[in-house]
Length: 562
Image 1 (cartoon, rainbow, N blue to C red):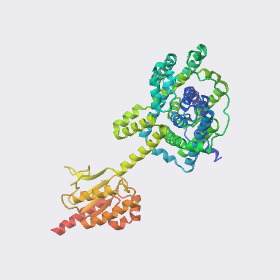
Image 2: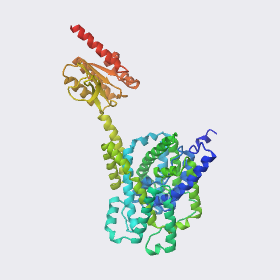
Image 3: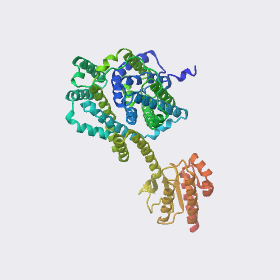
Image 4: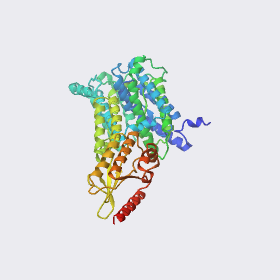
């Protein structure tokens, strides 16, 4: 029984009214999402039926093993764009070899997620900051939008690089198929208009049904409007991807890229919706669920699946509050596979391309970009750089850049932390001021605040500023008090620099004192010999104690001078 309780945690607790509510939400979710997952196959370069496969067994596997009540795990534009851009040069899209490579990427991704669960690597999600994730998705939006222009206009596009695709579209403007372009513009305008005024209206489904009906009635294919063609029905067949070892090794970087995005995007999405509904989420259980979902996708002829922010938001908008809605969604997909794939052959490519184009527009989060620019211009620049690299260079390179920029920004903050000296104003109130020569707190005293842990990259900044403040003080400094409230760790290199500083200050006749030392910092100071070098009597857990000691010492010195 204890083992059973680990399963289906995204459904529990559940009562009859909640089940009915979520079942209705699942019907609504299916009506909105089935056209979208069909559209994702245009990004993935796979047959249309594979989009339906992603919303069948993968959804079931995540419902069994995952913990999030809200996360929708199925086809996703970001991961689809990653593996399609990486595999398109290895085999023709939708070919048998291409699908084998697609399955291999999904299986490798599942293996990486399983390793992440075993070693509890959910923290890796934190290495993609929200800023660069916004930039990454913006770049993906531009890349997908440009990739759809050919199908939306009827212009033949054979290139795989975004810039080359745009160039071919511009060069082929005289070859525009007017009926195809008109149909695409109608789809895009209807979806965008309904987003503003009827956000819960399943307009993509209505457009798909209308497109199929019109295509069948008026023979769109005979009038130059491309259609999907026959779509195989029935349940997916279970096969193991047949690729060579060399090919498997070649796609490992693609799987790694998918893994990073899945970890970051799924964890962030699950956290956001859990917080919104005052729930807790088990990230490790979600990683296991994502691993099982991708393994099921690989073996059932689908492609990499991800916790989709857009589909999860659509599920919440439909009223879903547990994985029951996602299971109903999977049930509707099963019915479509068994009984309704025949009509899909008449669906125009331009209708799906128009739907995907609106998805791409949604990925460009202008509101978040404006907020980032207003609050942090430096982070805005990082987001824009990431977007440009993703759109013009490639998704894998964009992911690596996003991770690198996130880490570099963190290291930069630690390398050049905020440092200040507490200086009294006219009323005698102490205020922090940026470090500069000649600043003192009181005659003979400097209270110095360092805003980061001390490590090998910033210890020189710490010691240099201490020496500068002492050497350029208007009168000799007797006490140098370090406010260590922001310091929790000292590494070996920084400890050596600090001990050398202690020796130098003693020769200058300056007493080094540390205040607001927490237990972790004190343990490091003891272990590295800093406590012995300074003297225990000069290390305090508060700031008022060392100040009282300094002032009493100054009074004693003043009395002896008299």
